[in-house]
Amino acid sequence: MSALTAPVTVYVPRDSAARSVGADEVADALARAAARSRTARFELVRNGSRGMLWLEPLVEVATPDGRIGYGPVAASDVDGLVAAGLFDGAELPQRVGVVDDCPGWRRRIGSPSPGWASPIRCRPTTTCVTAASSDWFAHWRFPRRRWSRRSRTPACAGAAARASRQASSGRRCSTASTS
Amino acid sequence: MRHVTGETRPDGSLTVEQVFCLGNCALGPAAQVNGRLQGRLDEARLSSIVDEAVAQ
Image 1 (cartoon, one colour):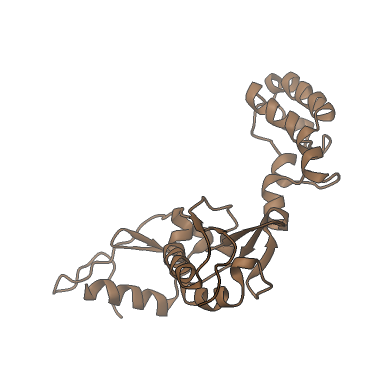
Image 2 (cartoon, each protein chain N blue to C red):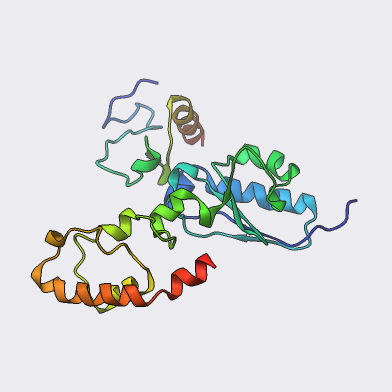
């Protein structure tokens, strides 16, 4: 009998989209494989999807480098993947790397990197800037000239300008995540 | 498998209904079988799911 391996935390989405392509079966198979592999502690977290549905079921394994993603994973793949080192973040065909750094994910959340044009942050064309969303802008630096002035209604223009000024000074979030 | 939308098999084992949207377009084609959403369907996968459901 092999020695107990390091604690493992694995994330498998439990939203209806991921479940429609077999996330529940994948989670069950991972739990069974973990029991067989004698991990010291196995934690299975059923999270929400990150929205990159082409990767679902997207299995994420917590490592010191970040959450390493594998997808799409079928339940029938799980035993082979675990045997090949899934719980250690091993290089496998389904591996997508650190999910927080995936281009698909960065596009969704808006990258804090300078010069990155996020479609989400650049085109708030239907969003009137309120107190809550101007706070959101202040925490996420966004390319100020990317969105059309015509898209702002007169009622929003003042608040949007204030949010823009705040955005150019408040860079807490981007500093934290790029350093 | 031949089946007419909106009808039930004579033995009552299968009814197929048309829906407007299941909200799972990114993982389409999609279907809902006995209340459970199924995505990324192809003919083989749908057949196996339906056969399994009918057998229950």
